[in-house]
Image (cartoon, rainbow, N blue to C red; front, side):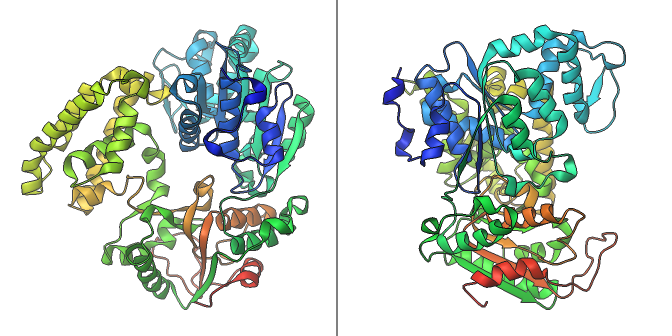
Amino acid sequence: MIEVEAWKPSDGIVLEPNAEIAAKEQQRCVALTAGPGSGKSELLAQRADFLLTTGVCRYPKRILAIAFKVDASNNLKERVRRRCGAAYAGRFDSYTFHGLAKRIIERFRPVLAGDDALNPGFKVVAKGKAHPVQTEFKELIPLAIKILDAYPAAINAVRQTYSDVFLDEFQDCTDEQYELVTRLFKGSGRRVTAVGDVKQKIMGWAGALEGIFAEFVDDFEAEHLNIYRNFRSLPHLLKLQNEIIKVLDPDSEMPAHLLAGEGGEVHVLPYADCEEEASDLAERISHWVNVEGIAPAKIAILTRIQPEAYCMRLTAELDAWGISYRNENKAQDISTEPIAQVIVDYLLCIYGLREPKAWTRLTRRIIPVEDDAEGKLKTNWSRYIKEARKSASADLATKTFAQRWTLLEEFLAMAGPTQLAGLSHDYESREHLRELIEDVKKYIDEALAKEPDLLKALAQLSDDQSIRILTVHKSKGLEFDTVVLLGVEDQAYFGKDHHEVQCTFFVGVSRAERRLVVTTARRRENLGQVNYWKLPRTAQAEFLGYVNLWRTHSN
């Protein structure tokens, strides 16, 4: 146990003053607004470290973190584990809003009656409400709220479990999500920390509330703090971002001393058509990967909408250049599942030539450090992998990979259901876990049908071997060395809420650490057969105006 006064941020990390105040708050709720790259997730991890290691979060109380995406939830959990160790991190629960709602329903399911009743082991589906056998994803939060309204003991049970609550990307909170939070914690005396950035509010179409931070401050009597520093982007990119901040949120304009320096690249690339764009970008990407040595996963192609349609020419060119890519619009939901990464890493270990990163990730997930103080488990797993590689050698010789699923099933059986369930709260349902495993296998089989080399097919699900293609919305919370904002045109960047369109562009720009490339085309073929597609294109003048002010290269 560390004395409160003696606590310092772990791993030598230096927090700016307001961030440190938020991390060490012991009484009040906190609303923290911060820009991109300011370390919002790191702040929450450091706050968890402070609360747990000093005993401010007194044992056996726990910390609850609520995020919007599965990958963000998993990443925060992992970050806390690295900061304060596995023992303390065992008292840190990280869920999505819908994941939390599902836990409430599973625990207090008998409260639901009539048309809302659900059977034990009910399924959650995208569409097809069929109580009591299954319910729809969108019904989870309303059903959880019904339970809380009908059974106050459920509220008390949650409150007794947690002393602290973290809300990540709070600017995107919807009315029903906020209702769930207030039902559970308003007036409870629990310390609630809400973190977000109003300049990244891009979920208005999904019901994100206006003025949510002000409402939270009033409802939870919270202290409102702001941090400005961006640790992600180099100075030239910061100056570009600051031009947009002046329009979106003048109160958050970065002070001049935080913009000092020259590093960073901003390119503007106008093309005649999408064919010319694809050919040139593929050559540039090949140079970035093969000459500059940038890891493929550190390069992102972002579109505002319809990445398949906008990138169809580009992906064909990347195929021709032998460059692996992953369409996150299709793969992100499954690829962010911990079991998917375990499966991919296992197959990489037994079929790959040298895969140290995959081996490190695999052993970290299946062998908790605290369970292997003497290293015996790791030694046993090493032997197992060596034997599996011998079995896989016949597949490598014939390039059929026929044993892949047999070897996988043997591996999963050896790991055991308890260990696999520990990867995620959702895996406590063995049926759900089995369904996910089958989904991963199906995805890999589909990739193999197009790419007969298993290692190249696995790259589409691997964390570190593929260029990322995704929408700006799905890129939130991510960062890349090089970002290509493809198709910054009136026909892509439009909408009734222009402020939200501006925020979307800002989110895309702020994903870049070192290099930003903005492209436009005067003509785009409707290769994806999209309705209401316009072939002639017009560059988005406002957004290109920001970029041109700080462009560092003409091509």
